[in-house]
Image 1 (cartoon, rainbow, N blue to C red):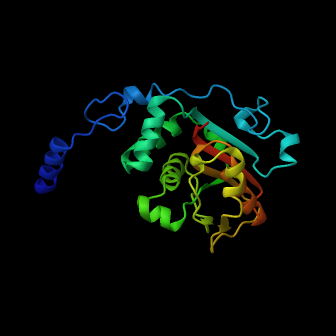
Image 2: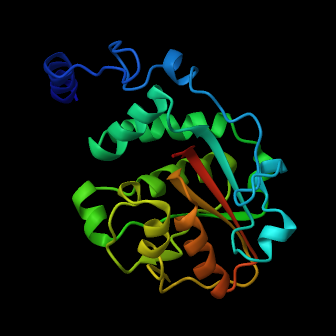
Image 3: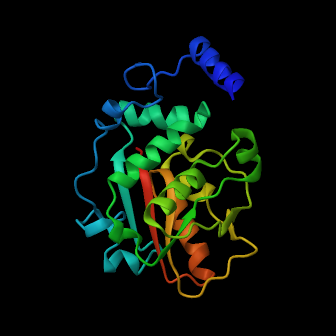
Length: 230
């Protein structure tokens, strides 16, 4: 135990842990900076932008889409949140995911999770191998523990696609089409699902996942994302 503590102290000295927001030592995202992340004040129907509680899809849009709602915590273009998510995903700083998960839980209403199952948006197995983890799965486990509801892997990604962030809207819709399939043990019979992802822009990924889960027997699909990209 002493040796492990010594190693941690040594590596912290050689490679100091610094906040992505302010550079302060001691945490990858300090409490002061996480408190500065702006929350989207009002939620809207993702498709037509009408004001809707919890981001519920309006009746008119729901007749043409599968996603029953999409709740987004903050805008991605704010530097602290953007830098934190980038370091988490692309620099593989998993601890930031834990901090963002707790930040999300603090800013979410427990009523959103009642009688639901949390399901992470999956990565293709090659992408997950390269990154070492699935950020949506990490976030899902934190929220499931916080709100005392199950988290299950009910989807798999069967095609390794280009990153959505590199494509325009039209190409994003084509890029994500048909990429999800139900997991082998996915047995659904009228469940309410909350899909978890880190960033959403067009909502194409969430919509495609919702389509797959509803075909498998889910009753309702609600999306939840940390950030809204542009």
